[in-house]
Length: 242
Image (cartoon, rainbow, N blue to C red; front, side, top):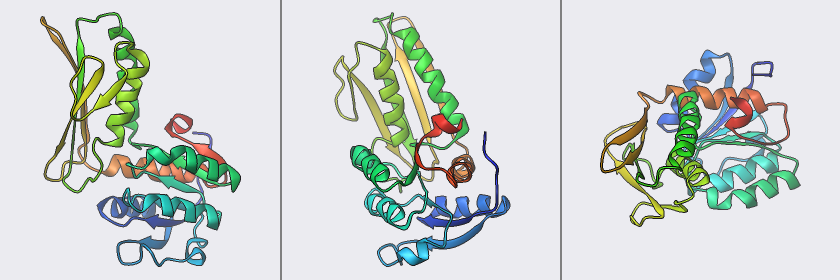
């Protein structure tokens, strides 16, 4: 990782369980939290408060993430975005980032393990493109508080498969036709995140899985991303960091 870590002032846009985990990791790494945005002040925190931060880390909700990102652009504060469920607006946000000379780091998942898993998923899909006797389906399991279905990570995994397997061109949580990757979405208890990709034929199954044990891996990745973009301009993803 080609960056020099220095102590930073961080704004946490979203102070639920994930925000608190990020706070813990950030403090351990010598940073300071200068703004915490939760349901109480989600619509009232000011640009002046935000400008006290060197970087913002956004883990709020699909309903508030867009306005938070734009507020960071207006405040000239680099922003790391871990919230999912907003990627239909990605082109608009990237355009605004470039127009305002801002800094955006976005990822559907900040876990190092998940990003290794994504590479394995892409490689396996490339191999399986030759074997049309196998059908591919997915399952994602998350805590009951997660609002978007399917998860952003599941969508990324599905799109990587679609890039490699010519017989698949879409994904769905309802349809099971031959050209669609069916994603079973499960919401249960406090599960931090499990993703399964399964290839099935009449003779055997091939399955890969990533199972998060807690939120620490996501939180650490988000803080490292914040350290990475502090003095940069432009748009970044985990491909730039890993």
